[in-house]
Image 1: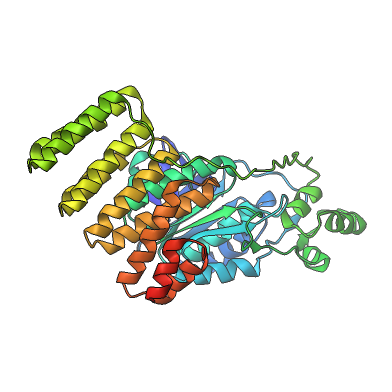
Image 2: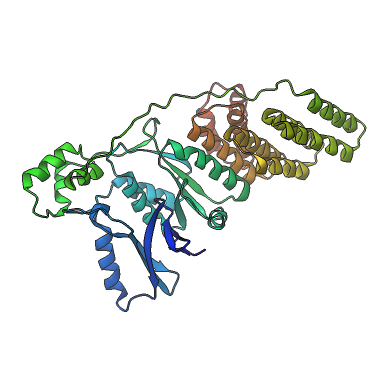
Length: 424
């Protein structure tokens, strides 16, 4: 596996762009003799719209290399357009580089906006700050995915189908790394989303570099009909039939919380034996029966039972002051999680174990990942409330009281939050 420019990875005999998830052609070699002139030429080519431009990205590779990536199959276009840069992209990239952005950032990018163009602009802008931008549903090699878990990441969630992939990324990041990461989702339904504003008609017309013989009135008609969105404008000028934009209303899903519920008798018997050995101060035998309860639930395919058995085991270890063992049990269970809800429940449990062990950074990372994953999937469960409380407490012990106040203000009705406000 070869990874070039923090963006392009070798797949078989070709190259994959991890920002778009598409194949590209890549040239890698020594820097040209006149590097400054080459950079200017590439910057000029890159500033064109992708409909008539082959160049995707370019730059230095380490201290002795140079790369240029081109679209494998660029769309033919009779007209040449300059890319229009959204001010919001510059502001967002600057805030990411400065470390002022955390969690999930929602961008309201209607159909025809050019969201993929925006992502390419953002990827180049944050690369110098050490961030790797990756589309969460891109088909990455396992080795690259493992490598990226230890990098600062900007995760792109372009549509609803990618949200499940995002939940998996967040879980792995929470387990493996405390590196800084940001999730960029395309969602206009969020109240605090970054609203991209359409460009003025004059701005679209000024972006035309070569009309290719097209009549001026046809260009003006396309600018008016595009609604101010660059991708729509380019598509109309290229006379490519626009793909149907299917808008699906996403209802607010509610998943019942995994509250204490009847556990299968066989599993309950294992837990009863574990409690019996706990009372007799026989920790080794207690752990064996707790482990047997979890294994029995897994054999039955009883996910809630497995979670409840693991939770009892971890909480018992915390009560006994065996914090390292609690962290180990919770982390191992999290590594086996498959579904999103199961993963969030176990991330919250692992966060609780890390908090008890005074590993505040890990507790904060895991709790934040639970909240981000819940927001991305638009589901509510008990894990969200648990993670919220853990994050509040972690911020308190780290002395980050202003951030704690802001977090408490988001849910003033919670009784526990009222207690924390009184303490502050």
